[in-house]
Every structure is written in C-alpha cells, then in structure tokens.
Amino acid sequence: MNAARRMPLGGGVVIDRRRMIELIEELRLAIPANIRQARGIIERGEHAIFEAEQTGARIVADARREAEQTVADTEIMREARERAHQTEMHAGDEASRVVAAARADAERRLDEAAERVKSQEREADRYALAVINGLEERLDAYLRNLREVKAQFSEAGAGTDVGDEDEDETEPAR
Image (cartoon, rainbow, N blue to C red):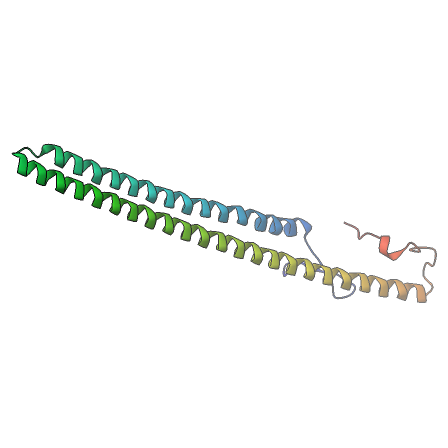
C-alpha cells in the first residue's frame, strides 16, 4: 500500500493488483507449512514411542538371556528364575511407563501444534480481512471521489450525454 501511486484527482492511490494477489497467495502458502510442522512433531512422537518399545524389548530380551545363562544347582536355578521373573516384570512395567510417557508427550505436542496451527489460521484470517476491509474503504473513497468529479463536470455543463450509465455498474479501467 505504501508503494501505491497517488491518483491525480482526490486522495486515492492505485494498488498493484498483482502484488495484492501475491500477498494473499503468501498467506495461503504459510498455513500448509504449519501443517508440515505439526506432522514433524507427530513423527518425532511416533519415533520416541518406537524407541521406547525397542528399549523395552531389549530389557526383556536381556532378562531372558540372563535367566538362560544361569547354570547351577537347583537352589541357584530357583533363585535365578525368581530374579529373571522379577527383572522381566520390572522391565515390562518400565517399558509400559516409557511408552505411556512417550505417547502422552506426543499427544501433548500434537495438541500444541494443532493449537498453533489454529491460532495462525485465525491470525491469517484476521489479517486478510483487515487487508480486504482496508481495500474496500479505499475503493469506496475512490468511488466517492469519482462521483464528486463527475458531479463537478455535470455542473459545469460538460458532457451530460457522457457517463449516464448506472454508477454501480461502471468498472474502473485497468
């Protein structure tokens, strides 16, 4: 708007239509970038869940290997089995906690990303509406100025045959 040319009659300016369309297109393109960012957060959350499951599986596998490697008499075997069982239970509990924490974190990040996207969409809508409202005000001012100039010409007796069309149907020259 600052770079617009001033009209010789009235206080209006000529707006570069192509630049205005470019600005609106930039706004449209910014929103998909936010969606890609939200997808990245989801993927990182899924990766964290996958790593937690892998860690849990390694812990369980390690516990089983430890139990199988224990070779001794019956008492040592019983103690080894008990220890392996406790380790396996502990590993399962720990893996469940890690997975639950990773899922909760992923969901929280997804919710945050979705809220940021919604906020940015609302802000983009507000900005676009403000630009459109400003454009509408300027166009109304141009139309008022044109009507004033037309009235001045009519009062001066210049061309009562010219410009008798309905004012609402006239379209500005491009």
